[in-house]
Structures are given as structure tokens and as C-alpha cells.
Length: 519
Ligand SMILES: O=P(O)(O)OC[C@H]1O[C@](O)(CO)[C@@H](O)[C@@H]1O
Image (tube, rainbow, N blue to C red; front, side, top):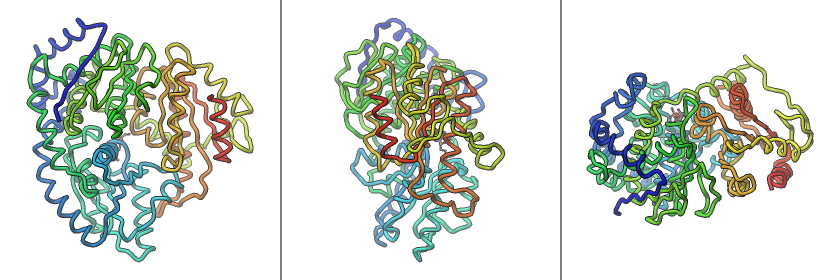
């Protein structure tokens, strides 16, 4: 498939001169030579260990035969269902790769007890890929423990059904090696959100049946263009467009994927976690239809088409999936350069994790609700009904603000709730993002806490139908997800942002009340 980028901007000269400056300083060839000095002295040490993604189309080749052989061996044993346990960069790329090829992959990126429990079935024919770069992400570690227990209870050997992807020497590497699991060690010089073409993207996708060799070929085909110090370089042009737009205050990017492969969710993490820091950045807004409402501070990007949207700031990006991964990674690195931020760290993600750890470990107490109700408890508002609390929150969405809907619910069971976002955006005439918790904490979570401080937040949590203990830990998943929501709310409030949390005791009635109030 031909790769093609079309852009439209009212600031043609500024974008052109940004591209010319990048060409003059040989940004592209230096990036592909892994030059860590491109983002300034403060970013240099992190960049020095994060740039190997530019060569993955070649260096990841060696993985392909091993993954295909394991897939054949598993299928020979009747193991064909693949569940992926992993958060953010450890799960978003495989989700897109498998969706693009129409192969089944159950992506379990949640700590919601009902959702995790619903993944435990057909164990005899299931392989669980446990993916974590750091090897310390609590969601992933908890899922691993739960599956180990489930396999053992079913009389199955966990080592015959669990495959691990992690960085060499991580705590997970050590545990998994000791337990006799099959371990794929990823390239440690690639950050999570740039890891689509490492073992993190390839192992689960390949086991599920995707053509991973073709994906690497596709990436290889765009390298010559992307490393070229030329004004025609699509990575430079897209990055310059995003960076210049953000500098002009057009700092939200609406992403609509015409191919329906969910590429927007992958770009969302890449752009939000890479740029959303130092109180600046680009907020991605995933659109559900090409006609979703757009505000004047948004740039609209359509994926999988050559047809430019009609908005003044817009782009159309067409191409193979492997090519798109690389083009967006280069563009994000370029936008980071233009915004003078380090596109390879995520400094504010840790603050919410730390707050959740304190709440879970009993070092801090969970907040009491401001109002207790039969259907829902209210936190962060003096209102005594769902409708009034939401009404008050929406009052705080002014001309500069955006609203973030953050639902810590079972995303498999409640698919379709995403449509609340565009409907609300039409009502408010402001951008509205939608995130399933805790998935979004590893994606837009960095931007919400570290980016431009104009977010207004609605959190929804619920009593699980049935809680799930985490084997070997002194907490349940229900306690964990509540601590995650409360921890994130605490960090946001400390930063002066409005956060309303509605905790539903009756899921159906609570969601109906929320939908009514938002409508
Ligand atoms: O692969 P890990 O180490 O489990 O991390 C998962 C995700 O968590 C983050 O570190 C932070 O949310 C992401 O950058 C990363 O993709």
C-alpha cells in the first residue's frame, strides 16, 4: 500500500519553515543514527537509551521464526485462544495489529474484577501472554497471579499456558524464568509506547495468527523516506504540522480511523504520553465517526484515507500499518522537539501510581463520599444527586477546558458507552475524551496530569458484581481499582483540577442517571 500524507493549514509558512529548519539541522538522518542530543541536554540521558525503535524493522526479524514456531507448537496442542495481559505500550499495538488482520486477541488491560473474571474460560485451549517492560506494573502482575491460580485449579500446568514478554533482568523476567515459563526478552532500548515492532507487539500478535513478517516489511518500506533530510519527508511534515499547530493553541488532535482498526487508540498513547508534560502538549481525542464535533483548538486527522477533512487544520494519512507506526513515532519525536519537551519520559504517571500504592498499603485512607446514595455515592461535590453533581461539573467546562470521561468499568461488557463523548462534545462545544480506567492511566493519563492544565474530570467507579482476590497479595482487585481511581483523583485535585467521582452501587440505574444528566 502506498504511504501518503496530505496536510492543510492556515499557517502554511510556519509549517514550511519548521520543516526547513528540521531539514537544515539533519533531524531525520540524526534520528535514524540514534543521536540523543536532538531534544536538548535535559532529555539526552533518557534519549540515549530510547532510540532503538528506528532499526526494529531489521533487528526484530530474528524474533519471527521463534514466534511462528511457538504458535505452531501451541496450535498442535490445541491451544489457540490468546489472552494478552498488559497495559499501555504493552498491549495497544497488538490490539491494533490483530484488529487490522481480523485475528482474535483478548486484550485484558484492566483491574476491574468482573472483566478479569470474564477472561477466565476455556483454559485448556488458552495461552496467556503476560507483557510488561518494567515487570512491575501491578495490573499485569495481578492478572498473572490470577491466571496462574486458575490454571492450577483447573489441573493445568501454568508453564504450558503462560508466555512472558519483558525486559531482560526485570523482576518478571526473574520470576518467569524461575517458574520455567517461555520468556521473550525485549529490546530494553525502546520505550513502551514506541515498542509496537519489538517483542511486545510481535509476540502476542504472532501467536494470535497475525502476519508479523509482513508488518516488519511494511515498516522497512517507509524508512528511506523517513530518514531522508528532505522537505518531502512525511514524518517531518506530520510532526511539524502537529508541533506548529500546538504552538498556535490548536493543541488537540482529533483522530478518526477510516479502516476501523483502532489505530487512534495506539496514537493516543504515543502522542499523549510523549508530549503531555511541563504543562504543555497535544491532547488526542479519538473520534467515533468522521462527523464528530470539532472545536477551533483541534486539528483533525483522518487515518486510512487520502481525503482531507474540511477543517482548517487537518491531515489525511494513508498507508500500511507497519508504515503508520513508524511515521507517527517520527512525527511525535519531531513534535516533541518543536514543543521543547522530552518525548521519551512520562514523569507524571508515577505520581498516580504512588498515590494508589499508599491507599492500597494503608499508608493513606480512602476518601469518604461527600454524599451517600442508594444508586451512587458522590465524591468531590456538595450535590446530593447524580444530575446536580454532573450539572455543577459541566459548569466548569469553559472556553479553554476539555472534559475527560473516565470510566473504571468493564469495557468488554459495556461497549458503546464511548458514544457519550461525541454527544457531550456537541452539547458543550468543547473537546470530550473518553477513557476506560485503568487503561487510560497508561495512555492519556500522563497528559491529564502533566499537560496543559485545562482538564475537567468525571470519574465513574462501581461495586463489582463479585470481587476477585489477588493470590499472594493482601488486596483484592476491587480494592486495587478503587485505589487507582482515588489516587488519580487526588493527584488531579492537588494540581487544582476539578474531579467529580460517582461510585455506582447499582450499575444499571447509575449509568442511566449519568446518561440522562449528560444528555
Ligand atoms: O510495560 P509496563 O512496564 O508494564 O508498562 C506499561 C505502561 O505503563 C507506562 O509505563 C506508564 O503508564 C506506559 O508508558 C507503559 O506503556
